[in-house]
Length: 195
Image 1 (tube, rainbow, N blue to C red):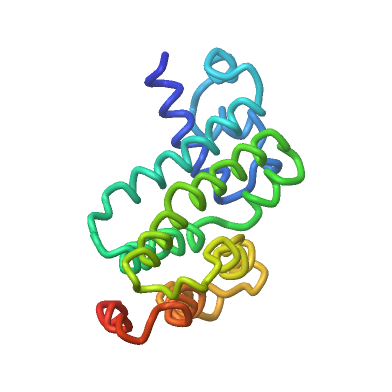
Image 2 (tube, rainbow, N blue to C red; image 1 turned 45 degrees about the vertical axis):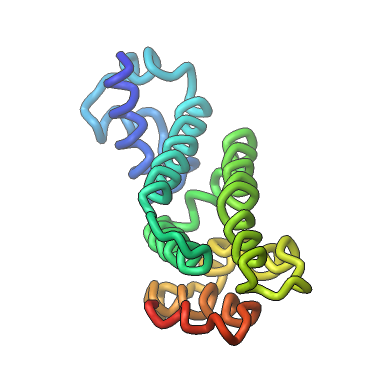
């Protein structure tokens, strides 16, 4: 049963990412994947549970990818992390997040909790490490820097319809690298040569 449930989560997530969760019914899922609604309901008590499980799987899969980044320098690691972030954002249609926000409040709250985890346990510790290593000026308020520059990066890229005109590389350059260059001390600007 767990294997079937996991398979349904994986496949349904891809479907939700294309069409949004509001526009996809349990009948659509059953028809698309050639399973009965009874099978789906034996794994999930309702659509909300399926949406929540898909949201959780999306983040867990993303966090697993980040764990594979084995760069020691915190600035370079942030850049590589945001390279992954931008890859994911560019592959998700905004309708997915907007439908979570409007129609699946609990799932959206989960989504937001993962964003907080990402900020507090991944990016801010790396910024603090860079600051402690003397690469970022001690006067920089890192939480404010994050809030102004990195918070809701996906929503901003979607609002600008950035990927319709520009590449992922351009998004990384203008939404991440240039902003980091603004707080990194001159002596450490060579950290950006690899990008």
